[in-house]
Image (cartoon, rainbow, N blue to C red; front, side, top):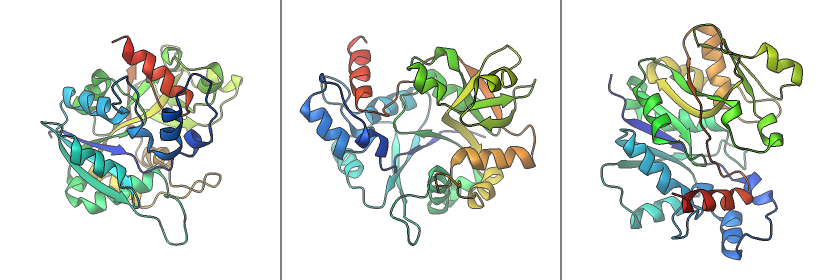
Length: 280
């Protein structure tokens, strides 16, 4: 089955970005954007182009043709951006993540994907990929997850290649894969003792950066029935994935990858991406 659809999750409230403190090298304009603009639309190069611009270029290069951009119910910025910017070869559609009753923020990434599929029911019978709007995935990684023959898969990143601070890397959840590369477990907040137990067959510690491929008919019910996380009070995509794995072992394959994934989590990440893009 041809897989040329990419769902980009962009409905989050960017709380960590807004709360973060910048160093003195960040311009007032960048600080203002970080505090008021969705992360995917923050300017990250000298010409003012945002992260979503580079993500879409990589997605097009990887062979995607249809983009489903999931935005918040009050968001207007992304629609305004695409009124002014056309990406030839990409059909960009908008899905809205509406707030559940009595909530003041979105209900999480699993809910965002569930609402997208309910708004575009044809996705139930398709294979499609999913990623964050604040990670700059390479075209190579995007193509690998798009073109894989596995029905459900994700890019399984080697932790040692992620060029983040030690504190940030240590905060990532880690993956347990079986000898054939299929996902068995995801461990949040690992300790030093956990790392040895969670190494893959090559002795590597693997992490998930939310770049997935799913079979709609196989995964939809797990999204629909995804429970709220007790601590975060959100329906999280990894929870739905783990529920699939528990009910259907050997159903989600980890594609091994060894590269860095630039992201926008804090204000200082804007400077990191500025420097990275200036070198290209």
